[in-house]
Amino acid sequence: MSTPAPKGTGFITPSDGATYARIMGVGGYRPERVVMNSEIIEAIDSSDEWIQERSGIKSRRFAAKDESVVDMSEPATRDALVAAGLEASDVDAVIVATVTHPYQTPAAAPILADRLGIRGAAFDISAACAGYCHAVSLASDMVRGGSARHVLVVGVEKLSDFTDPTDRGSAFIFGDGAGAAIVGPSDTPAIGPTVWGSDGSQWKTISQRDSWVEVRDGDLGWPAIGMAGQSVFRWAVWGMAPVAQKALDAAGVRAEDLDAFIPHQANMRIIDAMIKQLKLPADIPVARDIAETANTSAASIPLATERMLREGEVAHGGLALQIGFGAGLVYAAQVVVLP
Ligand code: UT7
Image (cartoon, protein in one colour):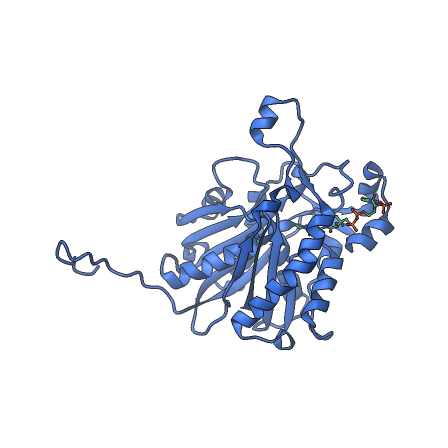
C-alpha cells in the first residue's frame, strides 16, 4: 500500500495492470439431448431440406428441463480452467454473457461463482449473440487496467426456454449450450482492439415479444424471442463484413494471415457471405459448428472455438478473427491468439 498523498493534492494511486491480455484456455458444454430437424418441422410446417438449405442447421442440442444456464456454465468453466492450467481460486472476476437466465435478478454470474468457490466480482452482460466478444473485450481491459488478473468469461444460453416451437421464423434456428474462456495477463499482444457498436433503432428485429410488464398486464402468454429474419439477415450480410475487416485492420492483420475465422454461428449462408466479402483464402479454416449446434447466441463463438481446437482444425497459438452480432442490434469483433 502506498503512502497517502497530502490532502488537497488530488492524487490517488494508479491501478496496476498487465501490459497485455490473452485467452488462456477455453471449454465447452453441449447438453446431452440431440434434436434433429425432424423433431422441429411438424409444428412449423417445414422440412429438413428447407432448414438445411436456408440455415445449414442439421441438428441442435436442447438442455434438460431442469438444466439451467448456471448448470451448463459449470462444466464449460471447469474445462476452460483445466485448459488454462488454473484453479477456480485463481479467478477474480466472472462475466456471464447471456439473454436466457430466467431471473430478472440476481445475475447468473454470482451463482456460478459460488458453485465454483469464487468470491471475486461477478456480473452478467446482455449483448445477445455478441455477448462473448463484448465480454472478452471487457475482460481484456480489466486485466490490462488492473481490476482483475484472471477473468472467467462465459457465453451461455438456454434458448429452448425462450423459443416458440410454433414460430416458423425462429423455432429451427436456436439451440442450447455453454462456452467458457479464461482471460489473463500476457507478455505479448494476444487480444486485438475490439471494433464494436450498435444500432438501437432496429431493436425490434430480434426481441422478446412482449415486456414482462406487458405479460403481467395482458393475457399474452410466454414472451418468446421473435426475429424478423430477413432484416437481420441483410444487416448481418452487408453490415458485418466491414466490421470484421475493421477488426483485422485494427489488429494489423491481413485476412490471409489468419489461422481461423470464427464468426457467430447465426446462419451458414451469412458465414459464406462474410467469407466472400472478406476475400478469405479458401484454405483458412472457418467455424461451421452451426450444422450440429445451431445458433446458441452468446455461446456460439466459444463453443465453435473449443470444437476447432479439440478437433485439431486449428493449432493452439493460431490467429483467429471472431465476430459476434445480434439483438440490439449490437456487434463486436476482435482478432485473438488462440490458447
Ligand atoms: O443470432 C442472431 C442473429 N440472427 C440471425 O442472424 C438470423 C438471420 N436470419 C436468417 O438466418 C434467415 O432469415 C432465416 C434462416 C431465419 C430464414 O431464412 P430466409 O431465407 O430469410 O427465409 P424467408 O423468411 O425469406 O422465407 C423464405 C420462404 C418464404 O416463402 P415464399 O414467400 O418465398 O413462398 C417463407 O414463407 O420460406 C418460407 N418459410 C419457411 N418454409 C419452411 C419461412 N420459414 C419457413 C420454415 N419452413 N421454417
